[in-house]
Length: 248
Image (cartoon, rainbow, N blue to C red; front, side, top):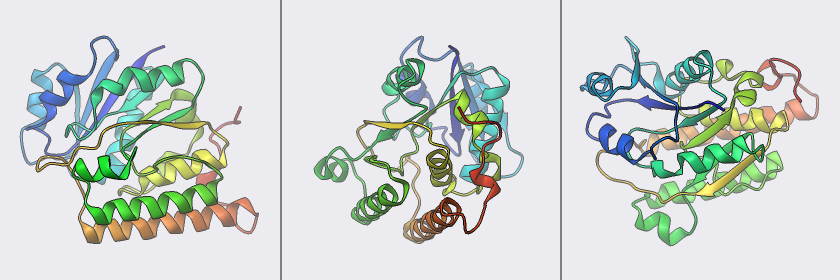
């Protein structure tokens, strides 16, 4: 099965090479970096490092970047797509582990859970307010979606080709809430979602959203759960929650 790593990048010049070096040799058949109109030399460095590079002329946002990543990976024949942020916040050594859970037909989606313990997350630099928001939203999402995941808000994920061909992720937001929308869609379609632990690292060059963006993201997540509930009980139908083709 062909595994492709996709990297949604924005101003990642300082951390890209370190992230790339930590991906275990042979765990990816191809690496695609999508540069979202960075103001530094991310794209130039990625080309020097031998990556396939796609550059947005205008910034499309985190969700918009992912849409380009997934289209490119599907077009390149990926059976498994692993999203790795090039800011070195997540441990790239988990790429083959996450891919294997899909390859062995155990999961359709694999998430890397940054919150194995409260102490580890805080010690890794996660702001306390983000930890609190994360825990509250995760409990609510598990209750609404009927799942039992340790964290919904990680950006380190692996998807099967089947998942990306079923879910209408093209209809999702171009903002950060894209990550939550795709998980809600997966829950509607009955896809198998699992998670594994990953250490959390926060430092100056790692990407992060501020308090006001976090609040907006949380409210958008709750709105997505309301739409999920209305769709599930049949009051309103949302095209975004229907499959692009017959679900298995």
